[in-house]
Amino acid sequence: MEKKTCWNLENSYRSLPGVFFTSQNPEPVHAPELIVLNEQVAESLGLDVKELGAGFLSGNVVPEGAAPLAQAYAGHQFGHFNMLGDGRAVLIGEQITPGGERYDIQLKGGGRTPYSRGGDGRAGLGPMLREYMISEAIYGLEIPTTRSLAVVTTGESIYRETKQQGAIMTRVATSHIRVGTFQFASRFGEVDDLRALADYALRRHYPDGLDAPNPYLFLLQEVIKRQAALIAKWQMVGFIHGVMNTDNMTISGETIDYGPCAFMDAYDPKTVFSSIDTGGRYAYGNQPAIAGWNLARFAESLLPILHDEQEESLKLAQEAVMEFPNLYEGHWIDGMRSKLGLFNDEEGDRALAEELLNLMEENQSDFTNTFRSLTLDNADYALFKTPGFSAWKEKWEIRRNRQGESMEASQRLMQNSNPSVIPRNHRVEEALQSAVDQEDPGMMERLLAVLKNPYAYSSEQEEYYIHPNPSSRPYRTFCGT
Image (cartoon, rainbow, N blue to C red):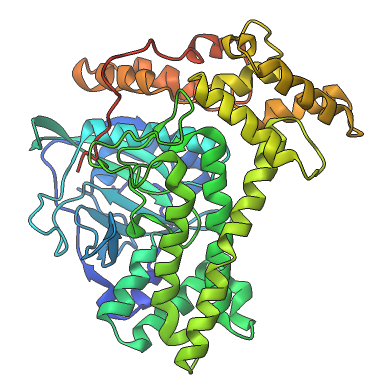
């Protein structure tokens, strides 16, 4: 008797012209084994946790109602345009939740597709567990993100620099429509294809825009707004994506594609972790500018449908993109005010925040722990004993005293805005090593439990806020493709 897992799948992406996808079943694997299952995500999707086994999560069993496909897209990778697509991912379908929400269900590592470009279509256990952990941490930090339903091993090996255990991650997203999807339509499709994609994106993510005077300008403006808010949230917690290629920027405004991502320890805008980002293109301090660059590419892709007159279309696109810096700046300064316990706006707030950041950079002060210690009023924190800090603190306290809210309210605002813990890079590596090399997921499970509520300031989090000892070797991350 077939097991019921409460799949409720639709396949609306197939309503798009065929140029946007290729029908593609997942490639069966030898011996799938469940490594981690996100029960909270499963339940929110309306899936039966007890019956959701490795067969479904590996692609060996295709759920009823699924019509699997691989998506086509393009993108600028480190500034260079390439034809891309789902080279190792298969979209199973769109799960409609009990609440009526729609989520893509994608198997990452599900096998070769027509877009694999010579790759094997598979993924390694370490990188998939890394994405699972970091995406859950980002979710705990209340930042829009794709999430991971599960990771299974395949019973097969893959080969990168070394031999690795094969794995498949089930990714959940409000959609996988990317800036690169629109670039693909503009470069390789017809105008009608581009218009069909824009209409679909509006229906799925911005339905209010369907009745707007210019729906496609509305789409552009809304994507810009969401990305401005998203990047500011990244900056507030020291998150470095690592590969902000245009194919890794979503139309929905969710964080996606956790490859060589990591969180900054000592504050330095030049911080880069990715082994392939040798020029620092995607450094922490460059992320806002890169987001603006990516959005300009999105606007370019929409030019054929923004207006019938080419000159007017270009004008509309330029005006929309030029709003990004102001939108981002507004989110950034609002975020910094909250981190400093400030409720109202004053003209000197940016200077006050930047002065603290400069002190942090000069003293190589830990980004997360500086704000944590400010929140806890920890006089013993090293930065607070350095020259220049006492003068800054006096300005900050005068500024806080000018607002009408109490100091207790200010501290609560700070606690809700400054995480006590982040997924420290050394902790992530320890957990990965234990789970992959020793086949013991316990350390990973404990880390995930701590990261579930990073603003709790609980006793269980105490050991996890400690930053690593200085090392002569800089921390490096890898894409894991």
